Length: 382
Image (cartoon, rainbow, N blue to C red; front, side, top):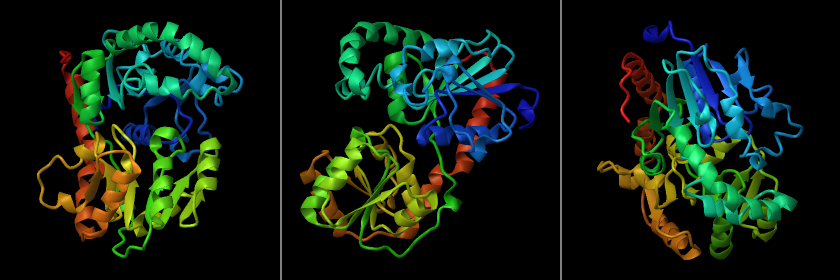
């Protein structure tokens, strides 16, 4: 990018620890800016080739013993951690945020662009859901006692931090709406992406359904187990999270449900490509996995909310042949969608064709053009 060659750029992530959609977007941004320095509260992706030969700066949280294990227990410290990072020498700072990375402090002449995956869920939209299923183990009673006294201040701090951002990018229309509601800020949508050509197209499907994700309650693995325990259809579930929920659901599953633990990305793509459908049961602002499935030519059965609906807003006649929706996160509603799915025919080539709307080339082009435009114009829209 010739227009930005004289700009010193920094990239900021909430944390670089687990691997999910936000981390995948962050590495896509890293590839656009191969010389940019990287900042984070903590870093635990040692050996990941994406981070080789990159300058990485972390906060004081990295020095806390067992910080990688207690990351979720220190939301009160992360704001201070990001405010302690020195970004004074950079011309452009891009934060990738679903939590506190937008709390960084920059100089008045520095352009701070926040790629927002969602306003902080556990402060705003999903506070009560998180509060009711705290994951602090034996410390849950203490957390339940103190959280109500701190949440108001945390929301105020988060709102103030959002006002430090010069320009917001939203990953979806739903996130754009939340940014407006909670932060009173405008934003522009740039969808996350995949490298469609890296996914093998498969026109020959086998007789099983497929789902893959982290084993946490709102990902709705239990809904799938209950549904397929009842209908006895073949289901493959993949996860790399070995926790109490995983053990509970595995023990609960009947013989038609096959669990795959800790499989490679290549194996995930193989199972995804051969599945008769990917099932997408959670509420998500944006979820890359259904796009990956469509890149393989695999249709999707999805819960009809947020991102799932957003992908088919366009009035394109081929879109009805890519998705089937269910309206409630219940066994009955999902069963009805599966019956409808099995009564229809799908054009796997058209499904693959549609996935190119979310190809990495579009993401790179849209993001770089916006950053160049903003870097030339200091009058940012509120």
